[in-house]
Length: 263
Image (tube, rainbow, N blue to C red; front, side):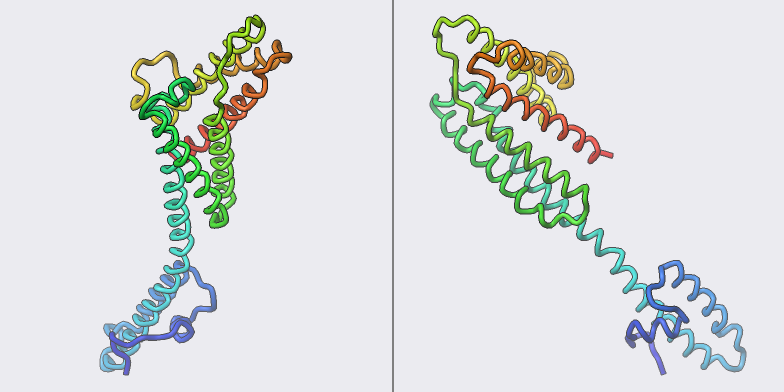
């Protein structure tokens, strides 16, 4: 005789329920309702014991099959959750580095060697490198194309931002007018790019006075960079400008991904 404390293997459960392999939960529920009506003791007056045993067996079979089907459905959800957790850990590490970088004004190269800022610059570099390493490490755990693409994008963004952090060249007053004009466009574009990055990731936490949004700043920054690479190709600021333009391109793609994550 079966009882509620008994267990049942999946093969037996499917046999009791009259189901074939790989049923859906809808198939399971439909089969259970149909058999429950057939074996319910109310329909078997005088033979209640037999009906009770059949219902007990049916309930055990239903519970066994339901556990199995639920576990199949939950597994990909768990995998998505686990990857999401890894992704967020990598992102937080990267953002910690970006926040430290901008909190201490380290986009201003002249400040990087002043007092405590030189230590914060080192710490910011370390955090961004760690964030990049984490993104590179978790890429192999992505189960879906969108996860892999988002991770690859943040890898590229992290690399581009790290290159941007390592730019340490400042203008030297050599009296060359074209060099100076190119430098001014480069600096103006860089300021717009930094503003956009701060606005995208940190908003009012780092921007106290607003002068447009990050879209207008990106557009303005792109115009400034474009002047350098088209009108001042003979100057020495083209390489740094192209690095920042690539970072701007990656930021634009990151913005789209972040917006898709919010929906």
